Length: 242
Image (cartoon, rainbow, N blue to C red; front, side, top):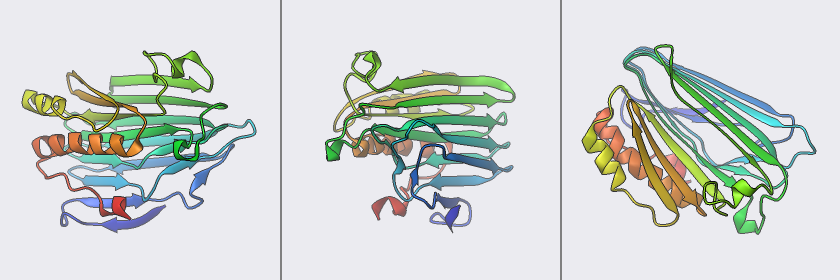
C-alpha cells in the first residue's frame, strides 16, 4: 500500500512511500508491486524501513516488481535495505519496461543474515532476477543465486565472505562521459565499490559489511546522476531519517 504521497520538491515530483503492512515476509508469501509512470511523469518511490525476509520451513517467499516507464518519464526506485534472515528462502524478480527516452534509476541492497545480532546466513537461499527492456529490446539482464554454505559466498568472485551487497542501476537514453567520471570518483567508507558503463546503462556495485555504507555510496552516486540526467538536485527522502 502507499503510506503517503509527498511533494518535497514541489508539484513536479511525486514521492510515494510504499509499505508492506505485516513488515516482514514469511515463507509462502507472495508480494507484487506494479508501477506505471505515464508520459512526462516524475515519480520517486521509497520505503520507510528495511524489508525483512523471515526464516522458512521450506516454502519460498517471492517478490515481483514490475516498472513501466512511458516516454519522457522518470521513475526512481530507492528502497531501504533487504535483510534476509538465516533460513529464509527468497526469490526476487524485477522487470523494467522503458520507452525510448524514459529514465529509470533504482537500487537494491541485500544483507545476508542479521550481522549485528551475530547471525550468519547458514541455511536457506536467495535468488534474484532482473530484466530491463527499452523499446521492446532487452537492455540488461542478470541472475544470481546464493545458497547458504555455497562456495560463492566465500569466493573472491562472489561475496568474498562479506554479508552485504548491492547494485544501483541507471537506465538512461544517454550517460554523459563527465557523469561516468564523477561516479567513478565516488568512494565508500567501507567495503569495495565499482562502476560499469555500457551504452544507456550505468551500474554501481557495493560489496562489504555495512548496509549504511552501501546506501551512502549509492546516494552519492545518485547525487551525481540526478542533476545531470534528470535536471534536479538529489534530495534524500526524509523518511530515511526516522
